[in-house]
Length: 401
Ligand code: FAD
Ligand code: MG
Image (cartoon, rainbow, N blue to C red; front, side):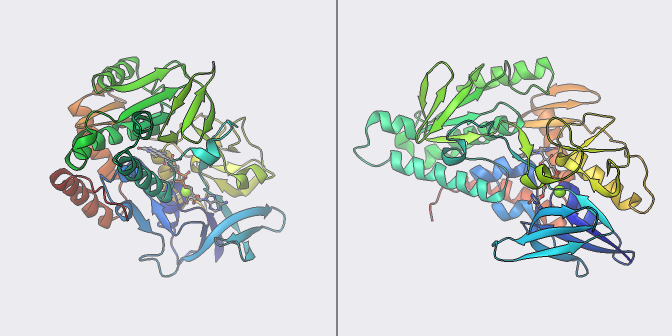
């Protein structure tokens, strides 16, 4: 039996590993997390619209024959066909042999080398990030409620700054607005009207991947909600309690979410394989690395030579599915564009589909439907609507523990 070694447990790796036939392949997965994470709902989890465990699916559940190891791939020996791995607690290293290797390690947040980002900003990539954000939000609301807090300090604590006007930044701002406008006033009536959200985008516009009409729609909607969107605002430094813009302006901030695009993970940077200018592994039509037909790369860490595909869950998922069918007899991968949508808070969204651009409540339902259809497990499909209902009826939970 051929041994297929899969690196990662995200959209690409999970859709592949869940489909490979264990009677025909010996499947091993190495990943620093033992669950699949449904990232489209990560901004919702960061403000408590859905609970953390609602949007994950354990890799092992229902797959007794899958070999899973909690750790990271550190280096590969392409000649010997072995990957050196390190356990998640960093205490042990071991080697993992393969006949076929599938690199599906995704990407990491890009700090663009801006000083202070790693130390003082929060990211939104893993579940632990969402938990950190939720804790920080509640901590700030509580700190702002302490008697004697100076007005300027209270203002700073309640100023939430999002760096990056792409889909992650926009969705987080939207979810945060829902929390601050609907739920916070019930528990913190004394802070009514004080919390502010600012989005800083270095480029000319937010949501650059969407149609002009949808970008305008989003900008208008956010203006109505008093979410301050500043385009052409380049952050040069993040410090404790502030961000500094090019030009010198310093903006006090109680929380800084950094969401400005992707960079390769260290393992991909270390690979002796051809990569594109963004550091992604170049692959052929059948998703194989150049000159290495036994090495595949899928998802955010891969770049098909013939097409510049966006870094999207549906692409990683389709590539994993494709590879599960074709790993013994390579065949060209073709992407089926299902369109994309971004939640804007309340019952609003923008959607860009092969059929055209949509905004408002129609787009909202398209977004809801697409999220639901992409949820991988029956458990998730039950828990997500239940959590939403709970948040709607009882409000998002703002307890600190
Ligand atoms: P990932 O899903 O990121 O998985 C990478 C896996 O590799 C992880 O399990 C990681 O732990 C593991 N890993 C990392 N380093 C190593 C290593 N050295 N060794 C072994 N394993 C490693 N896309 C959409 O299409 N729609 C959306 O609504 C959407 N919303 C998003 C919201 C947020 C907040 C974020 C961050 C992303 C969103 N995306 C969305 C993008 C989508 O998540 C990615 O395109 C998708 O996850 C890519 O899948 P992947 O398998 O390549 O990587
Ligand atoms: Mg993956």
